[in-house]
Image 1 (cartoon, rainbow, N blue to C red):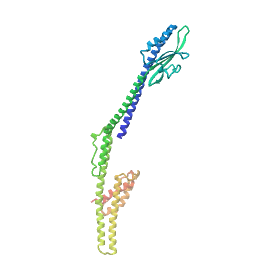
Image 2 (cartoon, rainbow, N blue to C red; image 1 turned 30 degrees about the vertical axis):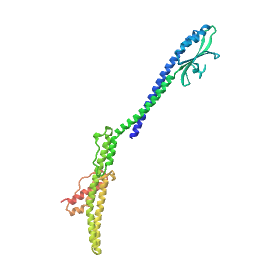
Image 3 (cartoon, rainbow, N blue to C red; image 1 turned 90 degrees about the vertical axis):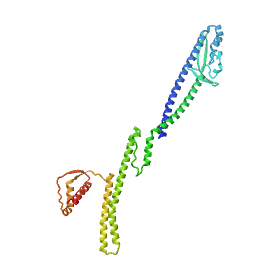
Length: 362
């Protein structure tokens, strides 16, 4: 359970960190894309402004010089200006534009790689305002390698940090779960120490977390019931030994006396009759003990039926009438009642009361 909780905790934290990392990477990438697009648009606007001023052949001839002055300080830019017949009118670092051609770059920014460098590009069509306007294609590329490297480093550090955080979280979760499940280990240790001679041990509720107090109470309650059952079992075993010792001793004595010398058939019959009485007494005792054992453990049937107590008592008084006359005891029934219960059990209970009263009344 400790390992499962620690694993689940670490996976949950790693998942949250992963989502946070993806969201952070998306924000950084979007921020860099916005910066690159703004820079690309600004440079393209500057080039377009220069092209809009080319209104004469002289201006066309001086255009490369102005473009060189403009682009010299921007080493991350590549520019290609071509006419409709794909003749180059101007080129700045054209080797970085080789993967794309005029017409391959749509109005949105396009990405490509050259010799390990990452570029985004933009292409526009312009008409030089000459006496005879000339359509041209302007292709502009921007080196974004530094941003790509930053994103790669960020991604590497991010995933490394997430992995380390997941491992630390797993360790922390394992320690926390181990500490939190310590009461369960104490319950397990207490269960291992249980025996018939050590049923008095109980869990300390003061040292148990509130979430496990109910479990500790249930465990202590189980120990209370076990201790009470073992105590009853010990007392019951002692009672059995005490009750069975007398009839067994009588049987042994009667049998030994009968076998001590040869006897007549009548004498053997008398001995057998005496043993039979003791055996019947044993059978009744065993039946009573089984009855008590079943009663203690709730194994007896518990039918619910109407019982007329007057009829039950009347039958019992008739059964004990001869014994009552012998003891010179008078029995009288008065009243009537009907209850719901087991008539056999009720008859047995009343019979015990009547039998004790007749036998022990002076």
